[in-house]
Every structure is written in structure tokens, then in C-alpha cells.
Length: 231
Image (cartoon, rainbow, N blue to C red):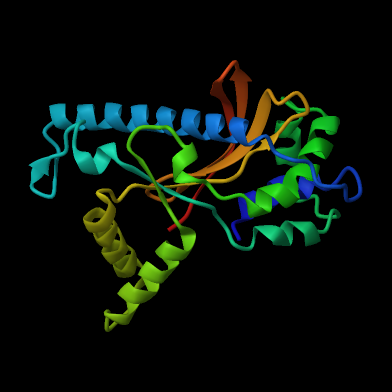
């Protein structure tokens, strides 16, 4: 379990006892996911356009903005199978007070309590390909990725983690047309459903814990309150 995801729920659990489950509006979850993916697609295409202009080569050819490998985004259907262990977090830990302070710049204590009630639903949530309308997005089952890693590791004499991941990404390109894997948690919504906390995992190991705000059907990122990198 990644430390920065644990941080958020430590502070969501600090103010109040356990509550009955609060249903998460599915429509808003998909709207937010689509806004997130559209934002990062634009960032990726902008980067690739700059790359093409500077003649940076990937795999012996310029990787231009309409490259099918770049144009397709793979998204895990859910993340972190240990997510339900949040229910057992001890509220005494004050090591990440700065995260709660950042959250309270945008949310009230009542919002945090409301988010806490959403945890049972958030733990079980999985993205459905038919309900996600962003162009070029393919949902990959977490179990499929796990099975792929196991299958690849069996055919490598020295199962070095970096080499396994290289082979996994190579297989993803062959099977799904992309190596760019994104991980999006089920968001936790404020009481008025106009703010949300969401964890986003990006290709290359960057992960962001973000606050988003909604206007109509469009969500915009207010701040990444925590950024971390991992292998």
C-alpha cells in the first residue's frame, strides 16, 4: 500500500467514528474520470508535439502526436487491492498533518466525514468500459495485469523487476496498442458534490493526490496536494 494514499484516509478517519455507507453518484465518478483523462491526454499530446519538433526519436522513429501508442490510454479497472485496510487505520498517527491542513483549504470537517462514509463503496468500485466515454481509453482488469506479470516472470531466468516491467509494457503494446498505463482511484466527494479527492497514477511512476472542483459537467484540478514517485 502506498504511503500517500494511506495519508489521506488517516485524516479522514481522525474526526468521527465509523458511519453507515454513503452511496457515491456513479455519474459524477465517470465525469471526473473523463475530465482527468482528457487533461492528461492533452498534456501528453503537447509533450509529443514538442518531442517531434526537436526530433527526439523513440524506437528509431519520431514519436508524433498521432502515434497510436500515445493516442491510446490504458486504465486499470480498480487499484490497490489492500484498499479495504483503511478501515483499520489508527487515528492516533499525526505524521501527515500537512495533508489534512491542505485538504481543509478546500473542504470542511463535514466534507471529510461525508467522504469517510463513502469508503465502503469506494473500496468495491470498478470502472466499466461501456460507461467511460473518453476517446482512446481502454479499461484493463487489475487481475489481467497481475496474471500478465506472473506469466512474463516465468519466462525470465533472472526475474529483475525493471526487466519484467519492460516486458509487461511490451506485451501491453502488442495486445492493447499502448504502454501508457493510468491508475485512477474512485474519488471521494464533498457534501455538495462539487469537490473531490482523487488519487491518480501516471505512466513512469508519478502519483498525485489531487483536489478537483466541478462546474457543470466539467471537473478542473485545483491542486495536487501530494506528489510521489515510485519504481
